[in-house]
Image (cartoon, rainbow, N blue to C red):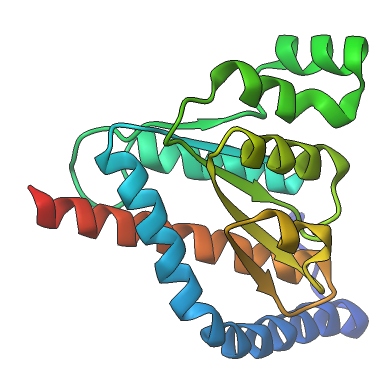
Length: 201
């Protein structure tokens, strides 16, 4: 006997349809971010050309996006090429719990930046609200260290906007839709950086 349901409840079908409609509407609107997407990719490309690295940070789903994008850079995205220096500051559970326990969770990224960042590095903060205290503190530290800072946010951009050299704000209030746009933007960055570095070769 099949375990698949024979009838789809209309209310559940509406969840999918309304979500898809919302997604499509947002993706029509984020076309306005294209110039800033390309500017951010150029900042990343310049960083990598100088032999420096990308440092990514975020919480929850944004942490997963950081790890996803760092993997695309150090592995490959669409084309065979040299590995690119990208590090997600969300992966070392010993560092995260040590710093969180000893200094407070708001310090987990700033403390890592202070120890790992070098002049010329590029810091990428991802927060759907633009208000994550640990991301904001780290962006402030990055500015203090003279690093390039890029933000990826949503809603009104929050306090993150004032702490970044360039901040891309997805014009939506729903976290799920913002995250969908974020990973699309992140994949666009990967493609743009790969293309630019391939042209150098």
